[in-house]
Length: 264
Image 1 (tube, rainbow, N blue to C red):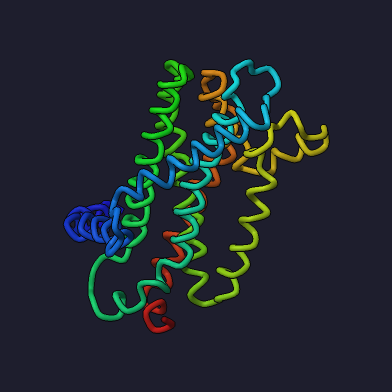
Image 2: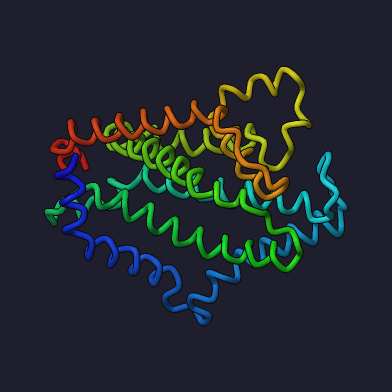
């Protein structure tokens, strides 16, 4: 394990350069360039705020703020977006970089790390705008926002572990990538992100114990809605799954690293 981290450190220039190239290539030849990075999430926050807070007057049970539902929605969508971006890109990481893997010799684990850093860069830009909105609207949470750091660590470990596991399997069984694209859509709507858990029936609330993302998303949203620290005892399942998928993904990659290039 220490050898892997040492190799990644030695290739830090390659990793940082790849993240930089990805960011620049997204907006190459566009008139506004990197400004789109700010404009797109800003439009999302404005739309959700105007539609749900001003037009629909949507309210969350027990929350007095007129922006309550908009904040609840943005907190859930931003963090789910980070999860979906990492796991979605990681499941195709070896297929998308087939030519690179065939032609160059480098630590293959650089590729998942590039995905994580690129996704976190995008998340930080969007989250910065969301934080500015919270400050301007007087809804910035208190000390509980510090809990974001461990929650994001859990989210990233879970998503990259799951993504790399699917990524290795997807090289040999291409149906997995197609199936997961459908599965994650159902997963999103079966997770209380656009609706509160209180809106579910007793049976559905009890069933949420089997959805590892439900407790994690609720923890993120409660920070911004109620300035409430996460109930850590509810997160043990997703923590165990994150470690499990990281171990399985790394094990699968090491066992099939040689076959990956032949199969691509």
